[in-house]
Length: 294
Image (cartoon, rainbow, N blue to C red):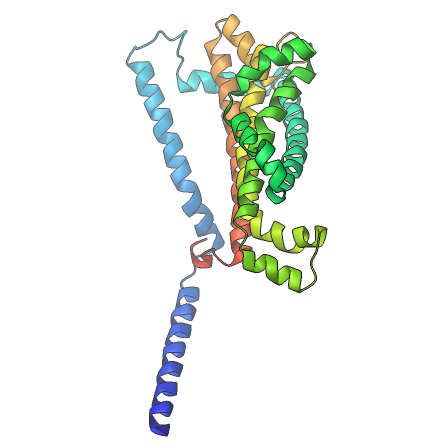
């Protein structure tokens, strides 16, 4: 019997040693930081090259006249020209300011509303389905009411941005809290966590991935609402990216219009990269990120 136990122990030690050897070998094969950056960058560059090539092929096909659909080179020259003047940067700053103010307020409303509904049976029964209904409602449908309430003003845009983003953030919080394992809640209470401490040390960390997903979706809704608002509410004095889209359309200036659309697209990519970095940091903290592949 002792011999069998010794043999089993030896086999287990050998298996553990083998796993350690595999892990060490995997670490030895880790690529450099520059190689990892290039591995994540070249697919994006390849996709960009393919998109530009397809764009140029469509232009060469003669599907639309050049004044309606200019080529990438002409739009690129227009973008460089716009970047050298103040108009693009003034519009960009105005749009980013509106986006930041509206999104921060939406985050505050969405987090508070989501936490309240998630932990209150009465509130969930009263307004839980209403939050989902508000999320599915197109943002553009709010603008007639916003203009009636606030006229053509900054407040009308702010109103629609918050209504577009806050329900998505609230739903993300509700989903995250719903999927917190009851075992964690019981363990937290047994360790003395009550009230705000339970949220701070147990519920919030466990629900964080779903909350970040809700924040990302809320940004997408707020950004789309903002662009729709700036396209409609162009009577205010300040310029913006949305207003420049409207002006370029009215002037039939296709290069200006497409270059502004490219700026909007780049902003979306930058924000998506920021949320991607936050998601990667959370997965690394939770130990579910493959370190060798990142």
